[in-house]
Amino acid sequence: MAGRTSAAADRELVVTRVIDAPRRLVFKTWTQPEHIARWWGPQGFTTIHCEMDIRVGGTYRFGMRSPHGTEHWKRGVYREIVEPERIVFTFAWEDPGGHTGHELLTTVTVTLSS
Image (cartoon, helix red, strand yellow):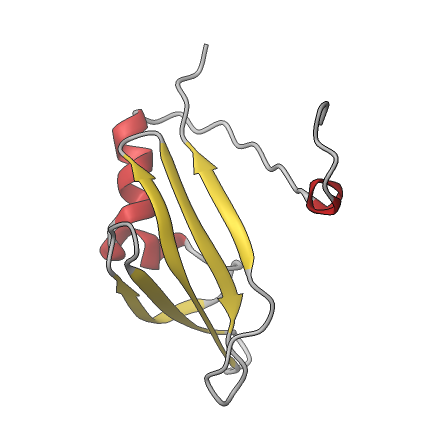
């Protein structure tokens, strides 16, 4: 990325997906628990807990169960919400004691296809 010189820029990951759906619907699937619980996580995993407070400063916490029965928990804080185009949130895995590890900053940008 031109113009970025911080060490964090060296660790930036950009993932792009093209989804044939209206922009507002894609945004809704990221911001409503009944939708995100159906698709978040690896294939074969089941969402066992989905708690979301969709507002700047609000938190979320998800629990997933692997096909082998192992539980995985994650949590974060919403930093920015611009409907229907952007969601910025932190992401951290919890250890079995409920403590979080390294925190990632995630930005989801929903754009119109050209």
